Image (cartoon, rainbow, N blue to C red; front, side):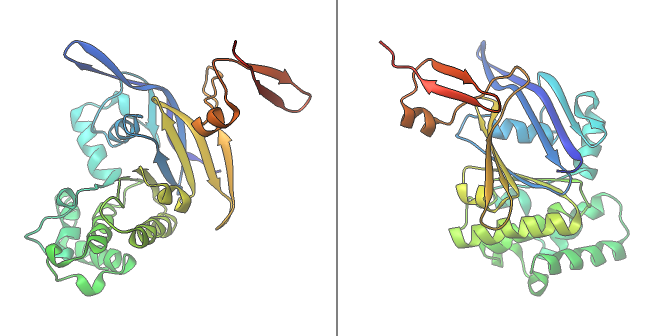
Length: 282
């Protein structure tokens, strides 16, 4: 698959609420490759958002390892995390109010991250125009962001997230406020821009349509990766169960239900494969 940009090993995150420990991540392992568009899916409470916050430098894990390129996120102090968020990672949030400043034009919004990074004005404008062309919004450059449709606002948010040439782009439910047709267009745009600009894209979502359009989809359940779906071409996918470092495999709920699997299965080891057989419980 290439070179991993993101490596997570045995990642654990425990929150404390009123003296009660809640484990959001339970030894999660994950690799994300350079230039890949990865969808992370799973039910509410599975640990998706916690993982994104850690990768974005917005939260720290309790234990484990997380690397982005040659950066060890656990070793960064607060100023280091600020530089990381400014220079290495870009964000696209579900709520457009977090992506866009309503009193600025679309073009001015795209320039903001570059202005904060101290880029000369001419370079700001050149890159902003190039990004607006790339997301199909050059004709909306001088419009206020409130005049844009929901899909156009998300396209503008993607341009803003790419302004400082991040290595990693994180998107939190980017299709949550648009219709299914627009959602498909946005995910295809992520794939096109990721491959064009060489940026690695991680999309956290509940939407199965996103998983269908991404290069790869990983499901998280109970704080661990459990399932992987890899795109081979436009209509063909390979599907895998994930094995963690302890050798644990989690069967998908629909398999458990269909085969009526209880608390045990019988294991048959063959020369080149493994068979699991349901056991009738007394």
